[in-house]
Image (cartoon, rainbow, N blue to C red; front, side, top):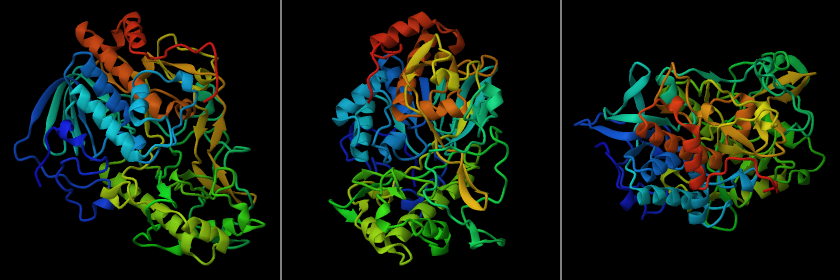
Length: 541
C-alpha cells in the first residue's frame, strides 16, 4: 500500500461522497468496521510547509482551511480518516442549529451548496465540503494520524504523522473532536465533568434530571429480578453515582447516527459479529414494561429509538447510546479508541438487530423496526454503516477564558465574540446506576438557552505560556455544561473560520495568537458575514 500525499480535491469533488476519493484501499481486512488500522510508513516521507496547518476533518477543520486560503495564506488539511465533514458527513444531517439567526459565515455557504439546512443526505454534505475545499485550492492529506508535535519554546514548529510525513507551519489549528493536537502540544485541558462549584454551575458533575430521557417505566436491574445478590444486568453500573454535583472523568455517551429508510433502497439491520442477545436483557425488560407495544412511537417522545427516513438518534435511557462504554476515549491511544469504536459498532448493530428480530420483543414493535433498514446508497465504503462515531465530547481546552453556564444564560458576556452559540445546554446520559432498587439514568440534561450568546476569542486560544501559535475551535475552552450548548456542527465551522482569520492576522502582524488585535479581527469577521452580536430579534429555528 502506498501512502497518499495531498489528494487532488479537483478530482475528488467530482465523485460521489463516500467513494474512495482516489485513495489506496485500507490495509484492514474489514474496512467497513474499522476506525483505526495501521498505515505503513511512507517510502519517501514528505515534509510539507504551510502558513496554516489544520489537523482534523470536522466542519471546524474545513472552515479553517478554506478561510486561511481565502485570506491569502497557504494552508493544508490533514485528516485522520478517509472523509471530510465530521459528523455532518457521517449521518448527523438533522442539523442541530439552535437559533437560525445566530448562524453566519461559511455554514451559510455550505447549506446553500447542499440546498437545505437540514434533512440532507450525508453524501450531499461531503460533496459540498469537498467542493468548498477544491474551490479554495486546499490540499487534503487523508489517512494522516498525528504522532508527534515539536515545539521551540511556546511555538509549535512541526507535526509528524504515523506514516512518517510531517508538516511545518507558522500557525496550527486543532480541529479534532478529541483535542489530540493541543494535548500533544502540552496545552492544559479538561476531560469528563467538573464539580459544580468549580465554575459556579448547576448541571455539571453528577446529575439526575427530572425530564431528560428518563425511564418511562421502572426496570429491575438485577440478573434475577428482585435479587440483588444475582448481580447486575449488562449496561448497569454497580458503582455509586456519587454526590450530586460531584465531578468525575466520565463522558456523556456516544452513538452512530444511522441513516435509515423504508421507502428507498434498504439493507436489513445487520447482525454483528459476536452478537449476544443476552446483552439486551435490559432493553427486553424495558420494551415489555409498557402497557401496550403501540406505546413505542420510534420517536423522541417515547423511543426506544428514533427511527425515520434519514438521520436516526438515541431516544431514551435504554437506546442506541452505549452508556458508560466510552470513558477511555478522550485520552485513549488510537488502539484503545479502536476497541471502544468496535464495541460501539457491535452494541448498536446488535441493538437494532435485536429490536427487529428477537421474539421477546413485542411483535408490533418488532415489525415496525424491521420495516426500516440502512439506506443502501449511503456509506458504501463501510457497509452502509456510518464511518464515524458521534464523539459528543472529548477533551476540552483549559485556557484563560472558560465558557460556562453563565455565558449560556447571558449572566456573563464575552466581549471578544468570534461567533454565537444558541443551542440548549445538552448532555446525553453518562451512566446507568441503581436507585431504590431500579435502574436509573444519570448525567443527562436539556436546559433551555433563551437567546444566542457570544463565544469568546480567548476560549479558542491556549494560555500564552503554553502555546503561541495554536487555535482550538472544536475542543475549545468550555465547561461540560457550556460545551453541551456550543458543540454543534455549524458552530464548529464558524469557530474554525474565525480561528483561521485570526491566524492570518497573527502571521501578518508577527504576533502571538493571544495578542491578535481584536478590533481588526472583528472587522474582518463581520465583512465575511459572521454574526458576532446577540440579535435584537430572537425568532426560533
